[in-house]
Length: 349
Image (tube, rainbow, N blue to C red):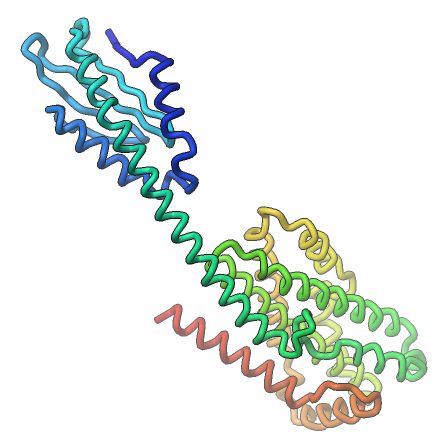
């Protein structure tokens, strides 16, 4: 036979704990379990086992061979049942359960209030830390303070395309469409990078902020890589270096640059990011790493003619009054690559 606390008492207990703690109960679950176990022991109950928010005690009485007392707790709910080896429960057992509840409720209520105060203080401190880090990150990535993340001038590619449109058309008119698609890809990627930059203001904690900043820096790096190789592609074509042109072309094709569906999908999701930010971050990071790995495998940058190509790019950029300094761009790319290598080395160690 089982004896339960009435629904009225359980409901009253739930209301007692309601809104006392605003954090995740799983964070304090183990500590609460220890509290319940120690109070049971104080009543003379022998602790048997605990599992799935359930604690089992044993109590030996002079009238029975023993009874099992089960305490179940889950967030704001507690219930108790007592089974006396098939024998009726004598009134004293229910009194013991009542005593357990009457003692534990005010203590747990006070415990939850204390935990809530600690949580709010920690949350307040976390917000101050996040706010300070966000300010430093913005100062680092937006040097002129115009509210936009500092990126290399992607319009230089469009200017070069417009300047050499006739030459490219004479080689193969279909290449114009390919270059236009690269231009659209770069614009969408720039827009997505800016969106991620703006989202760092909404970071809830330092962990989320660090993940966003890591994603943002990866985005900036891949954007710079794409701009550099796009400039190399158009310059190699007009300089009749078709091997370099086709190597970059095939790499871009494999990455889906010529259909831009991935970047457009990212753009749509960023406007309605909601609670799915983590899944989106992981997806973007995977794609960014694919881009980096693919472009790192390009061999034209190791050829003897690479220096000549860079000089040609510099000449082309000067002819359109571009703000891009190709040496600075390459230095920035190499610096970030070394930074990532060092990060990965530290993780292994």
